[in-house]
Length: 118
Image (cartoon, rainbow, N blue to C red; front, side, top):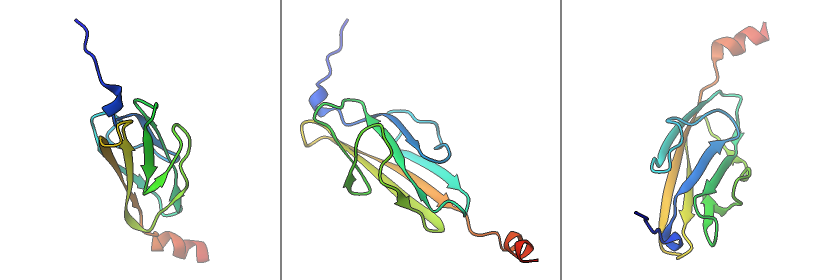
């Protein structure tokens, strides 16, 4: 038995990763929410994503169109929680899927900072 898929309405990702660290849980096409913890020294991050169907598909990272399979523009990270939104719009221009990576940039370790001063 064959299953036909209208690629014109496919708006999923086939891969999703970041320039630093590993998202949790591990990427799955149907999973749309991920988390990532980074140290305080990390001030920006890039997203690398590839849509399942690239023909006629568009992809935005935090509102800016980006190329497939390469680093997006760097996304600045504040201390604490930072949501990075990836929106994939299918060839039909109507179907879309939103993926979110919640990046938590840790606070500066004051104790470690004080040790560096002495």
